[in-house]
Image (tube, rainbow, N blue to C red):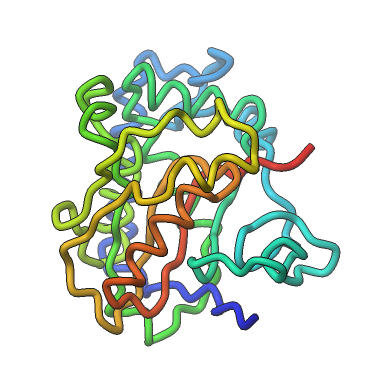
Length: 252
């Protein structure tokens, strides 16, 4: 199997300005400027330095396809045995304490200030320099079902994607694709059942011929949902599908 390299788009000229605005917004949202996790003084940052340094980051040597750790950064056995429909995965954190608290606050308490923090973390984790071939990439947020969207009121993946699109200077597509089946939560199923559970859950009406697609999501667990979405996108012509996920669940 040939895994595509993790190309990265060129950052938009306004990146520094956006980062400054994001920092001010994070600070004002957290008045009186307390750390989101421990309550210590954090200035204009979401987290104090100690909490930020203690976040569980993924090791540098990871499978380029699914982002699980491997001894030499080679493609893992699972991806060699059953190649995924997506081509690469970028992630920065392992889904462990306290990253799980950050993401749960975003998803279930509408703490949208966390989305900027996760977007910035993804930008910092992205390899440089960018590849020219990625300048025409499109960003898509992994969609929620209509029922889940009504319950939650927003799509956390889309909230992470919005600042990324601004920083990268790339189009963020919101329409033309959707999740049509409200499946049982993947976390409630055994690992081997998750791919079967998600089959046929997405529809796409876009012509993606020859395009590179960057799919944004908050957490990648087994990768079954992202894999099914990538399969749908490639059926509609996508040449490459790259996942950008804030956190990756590891097999402890």
